[in-house]
Image (cartoon, rainbow, N blue to C red):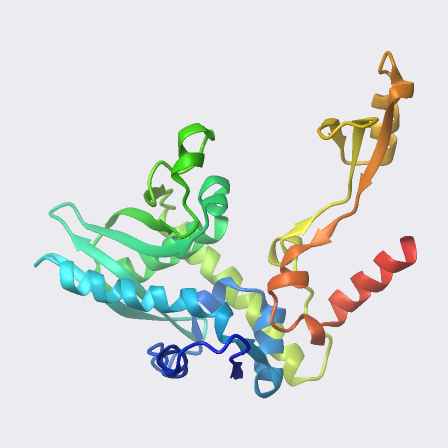
Length: 296
């Protein structure tokens, strides 16, 4: 993949981006890839030499590397920093690098550091829960020691003291610790097996020139089309409905219904439109765009 520099960032930044420290250490797949969309993983591998990403979009990844230096500087004798653990399951070799393990008399506590947005902290992320539970599986498998706690340490890059003072649910500080539910060991293992199956199917499809499995709504960060009942001249919706039929029924029940209208809010696939590096090569997304244009 080619890294461009559209905004003329300093040479030091560019060199840092061109000298990644990440490695899977011989694994077929990292935990990050395992949790990702099988279609996206395969398309990235297929078109890797043709992909471009601007340095400005990668700057926050440098903060992840910097955090590891902070952890190394601040570690105690019972801290294990940036350890990569491995597992062989169903013929697949997977690995994951764990930011911080704290060894206690009761077991091991896992922390993963994320540079993220206030919105994601407020909304929560199933991806975080899945990732931390896979890490917990790797720790218990390799060390035969129970994991007692898993947590995200979120560094909120767009934190605002003003919004923290009045917005409900907004992070109260620019660094927030979020406890993550710990699944039973058997559930973690089954989840990993299910992900391996999904990626195995996609790999087979790629090798045999068959159609790749489609991304799920979760993979695409899909928002369904909804129908809002709006007062003429108003800004906020009186109510929002999943179908036009539901909206029409609710609209008809309003006392002064002639002062209101039904506004369609078209669905979108946020990741495909704004964040997916291979969307331009994805026929699933092209079909979605063609269908959207047809219905307009």
